[in-house]
Image 1 (spheres, rainbow, N blue to C red):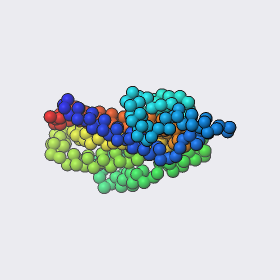
Image 2: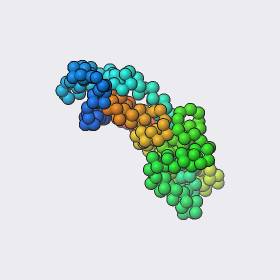
Image 3: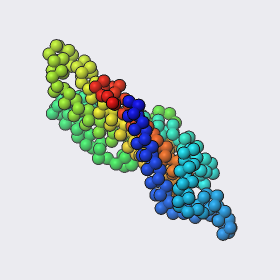
Image 4: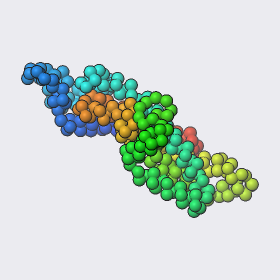
Amino acid sequence: MWTFVARRLLTAAIVVFGVVTTIFVLARLTGDPVSLMIQPGMGEKDIAELRASLGLDRSIAEQYFRFLGQAIQGDFGRSPWQLTSAFGLVVERIPATLLLTATALGFSLLVALVVGGLSALFRDSLLDRAAMALVLIGQSIPSFWLGLMLILLMAVELHLLPSAGYGGWAHLVLPAFTLGLFSLARLTRLIRSELLDVLSREYVTTARSKGLPEGLVLRRHALRNIVVPIVTVLAVDFGLLMGGAVIVETVFAWPGIGRLMIQAIGQRDFPIIQAGVFMIAMLVVGINLLADLLYAWLDPRIRYS
């Protein structure tokens, strides 16, 4: 098992290195950030000093290797926009983003278990067809459009929920639903298809022939055998939701990493962009590594040798 963990850690390090290198290059294709920070009355000498303070007077290669050395120490430089540590700003936004992502995933999983389970039990019924139609719609709706429509309906027209901001549970409902709808649709289809396969197995038929209640058969014999694919999809969806949070946080003014990075892109704030991408990459890689390690615990048939 330790050999497997070592291989996965090496793979994770390579993935993070590739992501950070890519964003370093792409960030510098957006233009010169110094042009946004020039104040009236600044001369050529002042502009040159500003460029030197940001390290932008060096060659791209020097900037890159300097950036890598500092990134290993968790130092992504000082934000020229916020005039403070870029990594510190990103760390401050992590709780809000994780709260939104975890709520969206939890909501998606709970609803998908109920809807997917009922669809599998009542295959080809009106309930099953209605559920699959809703799933198709859920996978087709763009999150930014859905978020705006929910704001118009629930906040502007009905005055039931706040339209934006960060506060109590009411502020979490609309962005979590918007963010989690795509994952909900995918999980529902997965659970339905996996249950249809498991419910046709001989051990389920045997359990039913013993007179066990259908609910007990579903919980003890069916759901336990589809946990591994569910965990796999949840780990993948975590990365998708972290990316989708950029749009959802902007629509709902949610103070997370995604909204911070959108603002940083507008300001050409390289340190915040790089620190944000690095943190998201670390979180996604960490969750996928955790999912890999959970497989053997969830299914004793899996071995890492």
